[in-house]
Length: 218
Image (cartoon, rainbow, N blue to C red; front, side, top):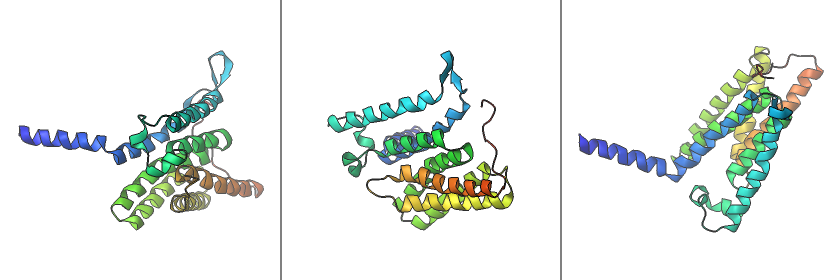
């Protein structure tokens, strides 16, 4: 019995020390960005909450400068080889989320952030197991659910169309990402841009748009 417990603890310890597990855990944690919407519009001393987002940008730049100038740093075990000569994926994710939170409505920003945070790690896991099609199919379905939930206050046909647009462009962004523009950025921004155009067409045609998802503090 004691031997079995030791084996389980040893296996768990190995899992949490695994680079891939840590990266995917960090990736999923990126969804915490939507917590921004739960903040009051103004912080103490009438400071707008957007100051938090603007403060993250120099923080990200500082981290990048640190890891580029310090050869042995604590983040090195989380980085892929190609990230040693370009900004890290987490920096791309942070910048993409900040852009969405600043310039896009909630019914676009929230599903785009959550889709990138959740679906990308799932696709990565299945790629490692040579089940790429299953990964993209699972990612597409999960992403579709997120967009449907975000657009459920409008008509079913509009909500379903938005979900298909958002999920498909998100999967295309993951599949077609380049060395210089990480998929952690593209999976947020490309669907957001396309959906913003879609929302503009709906507004022009006097068709209903979704309501704000988190409105209690706005």
